[in-house]
Length: 185
Image (tube, rainbow, N blue to C red):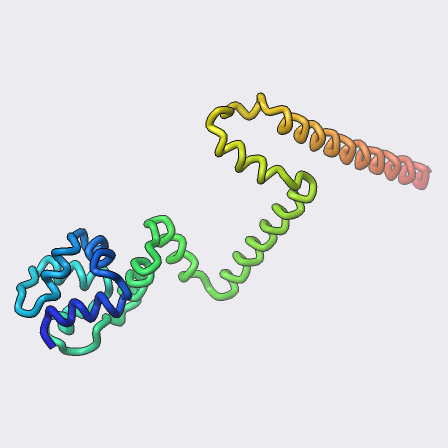
């Protein structure tokens, strides 16, 4: 099989159209089409770029020797990052998680679930708050949230509930304190 056919095989294996593959390589669709045509020369720069971006074994691509993909951890990760179009920040987050032990990853997941539960319970207090926030962010005419009456009313309700809970807690502590003093006497 020729180098040109192996380039096409890589693209098909990765399930990219010529246009998508070209975009990943910084080329035009016509450039990829040209590289896939029998007998056309492909620059060393494009060969190295394909190998780097898609974790391709350069010896396989140039000569047909070995396996299509390289097998080291970095190249596997790079293929994963490329396939899922991970941003640099997402790649660092993924690398960080992969370096954790299984137990540490479980702890992180437990914290995330706890955070999700906290958010859900907050939505029980003000169920439309997140929906309202989305509407506000989409409303370019009214960027000043302080002028929104519905928002003010919800905040007032939340403040009243918070103050009532605080008074109730203070009252309970005060009752407990009086009972404790009475037992000491």
